Length: 173
Ligand SMILES: [Zn+2]
Image (cartoon, rainbow, N blue to C red; front, top):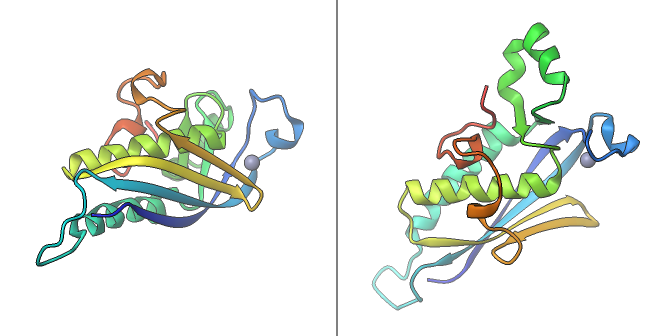
C-alpha cells in the first residue's frame, strides 16, 4: 500500500483571547483546508485487489465529521464568556461550538484533528499510521503537526476530552 493524503475544506470562526491580539480577539472566520497523510502499516505488494480498501472507510468517517460537525463551527476557548451567552440565550446552538482547552488557535485545532483522526483509525482497526495533519488557514499560512512536534502522550490535553473520543463530538457540553 502506498502513502495516502486527502484534503477537505470547511469554514470556521474563532477568537483568541489569551493571545492578547486585538485583531484576533473579535470573532472572525477563515475558510480552511485540512490535509491528512496516512501511511500504511505494510508495504505495497501486488495482489488480486492491489487496493487500499480500508482507506475509503477512514476517509468516509473523517469527512463525515468534517462536513457535518466541523464545517461552520464556532471555535471558543472553554473560558470564553461567549459560551455562557449561548448557554443562556441560544442553547440550541451549543452543538455547533467547538471547545478548546486554552485559545482556539490553528495549532490547537491541528492537534485536536490529529487526536480525533487517530481515534477513528484505532476504532476502525485500520492498518494506517497517521503521519501528518496540515491546516491551511489562509493561502499564506499553514500549520503542520507531525510526530516531530507533537506527541499525544505528553500534549497535556485532559483525559476524556472530545478529541480523544471516536465519536462525532466537537465539545464536552
Ligand atoms: Zn483567525
